[in-house]
Length: 382
Image 1: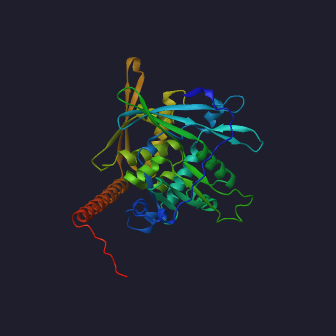
Image 2: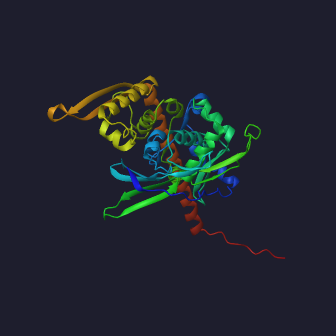
Image 3: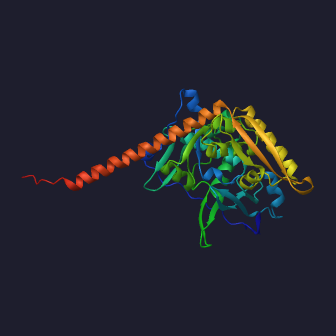
C-alpha cells in the first residue's frame, strides 16, 4: 500500500490564501450551497453538504495506529497508494504525508486520518453559514473563514472535543498533505490531478487563543469541492447523524448511502457487498482476518440502525469450496426518516440546477437581444 521511498525531511511548504473579495462571500452560486431544504431551523442546523467524488475517495483511511507500524526509524512515511472504484471506473489515490515538527523538535510524518476528517467536515458545515463560506469563480476557489474558537465549539457540539493545539496540528496536516487522484484513460495513459487537502491556509498562531477568540483563519478547500459547488453536484445530508457515528467506518457507510442511495424508498432496498466496502473504503485493511473485518462492519450497520438511517440489514454469506467465505451481500432497508432526507436532497439539487438553467437561458436571451438591437452610444453636445 505504501511506496518504499519514504518522504525525506524537507521544510514544509504551505500556500497562504490570497485575499478574498467581499463579493465571494455573498454570490448566488454560494447561496445555493448554503441554502438547505428543511421545515424548521433545527433541521437546517443538522444539515451540511456531501461532495460526490471528493467524499468517495478513501483519503482518511490510515489510522494513527497503522501509521506507527509504517514509519521508518526516523519517523517518516512513504507515499500511500490506494485503489478504489468510482462510478464504474478504477481510480488511484496517492497520499503524500505532511511533515510536522513535534514538541521535542523532531520531524515526523502524518497522513490525514480520523481527526482531520472531523475537522474538514466541521469546516464544511461552517462554510454553509452566511458570511463564513466563500466561492470565487474568477479565481476558481472556495473555502471557509473561521476562528479557532468557532471551529472548536462546532466540534464540541458534535461530540468531538479537541484542544487548540490538536486543531492546529490537524489544520497543518490538511494543508501540508497532498493527494493525487489518477484515472487510467482508454489509451492506457493516466490522467491525474494533485493538490493539498486544503489548497491553501492562512491564520495567526498565538499562545493564548481564549484571549483572542475572534482571530480569523481562512481555509481554501480542495479543488474538487470548488468544482462541486460550481456544478451543483453536492447533496444535503444529516451532518449531525454522521458526526455522531462512533467509527470512521460508520461515517463512510452513511456517506456512501447519501451519495449512492439517492432513490431511497420503503420498497426500494439497497445492496452492497463486503468486498466493495473493503476495496473502496480502505478502512478494513488493518484486520488480519475477514471475519474480524466483517464483525466490525456488522457493528457499523447496527450503529446506523440505532441512529435512525436503516430499519433492517439482511446479510447473506457467499461461500465457495470447503465452505470458505468469499463475500457477504448486505441488503439494506431505509427508515422513513432517511427516505424523507434523500427526497429533500433530490428536490434541493433539482431546484438548484433548474435555477441555474433558467439563469443561463435568460442570459442567452439578453445576449441575443443585444446582438439584434445593439445599444448605440449617443454623443452629447457640449
